[in-house]
Amino acid sequence: MTKLSMNVTTTFYGNVVNDIAVAKAAGFGGIELQSPKLYRYLDAGFPAESLPPLLEGLTVTGLGAVLDAERQGEGREAFLAEVRRMCGVAVVVGAPIVQLCTGPVDWEVVKDFRAGRPAAGDARYRGTLGRSESEAIDVLAGNVREAADIAADHGLELYLEPLAWSNLNRHRQALEVIERAGRENVGITLDTWHYWTVGDTLEEVAATPKELIKTVHLSDGLDLDRATEVPDQSVHRDVVIGGGAIPLQQWVDAIKSTGYDGWWVSEMFSTKASEHDFLTVASTMRGLLEILVS
Image 1 (cartoon, helix red, strand yellow):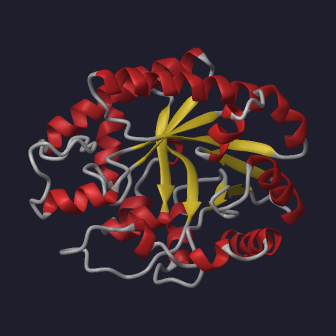
Image 2 (cartoon, rainbow, N blue to C red):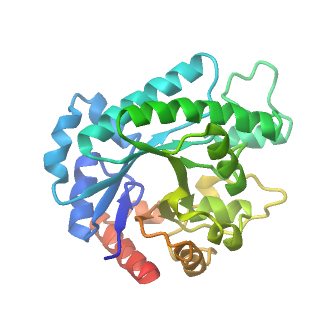
């Protein structure tokens, strides 16, 4: 049976409760719960223990995302505290895995940095911008190692997603981070938009050990000049899945060639789709995923 899960970006302006209801009604077998919606729900005073009854009939395929995973100093302690929080929620809702993302999550910072615009007093988070690749990988790997130990204490795994505009944004870099972290409970989120956008290849994907692919995000995007443009999610990802420039069937076939048999997750940042009926959008995306991966 094809394993189809709905990332809650699919119903972008929904909340946790109606996202769960829509995923069920649309025929998804799973749901990937994400911040900020998840944090909004919890911070409003609803306990995590209120979610399992709502989720009956759905598998929570993953929980995310802890952003800016390379944080240092006081930020590092905040990062690890967030990992502990997310892992605690994951245990309650039955999610087997928690997501980490590379940073900075703010692509405008990356644009300004590359253009030489940030002033000396610019306090915006820069992550490892300006560091060598090897140093940046070591910094991230150290944080991933500690996060993996926290996850292991909860009986969980981690999946690392390299964001296309971030300092560490390539498949090979993610694999190097995992190797240097040296923890068996760490793998990758293979996101078709991030991978295609930075120029990672089908051949690289097909050569990936299947046990490292913890989930697949099927997402579409628009063309860009990779040599000159910083990927901007608000621009280059503003398209309905199946309506963009990514040859999704080729990516699905390359992933399947590894022997991957896990969850396929819809992820979408289309402004038009976000203004449409939630159930219509979710049902359409589930049908598209069924065609792509069956």
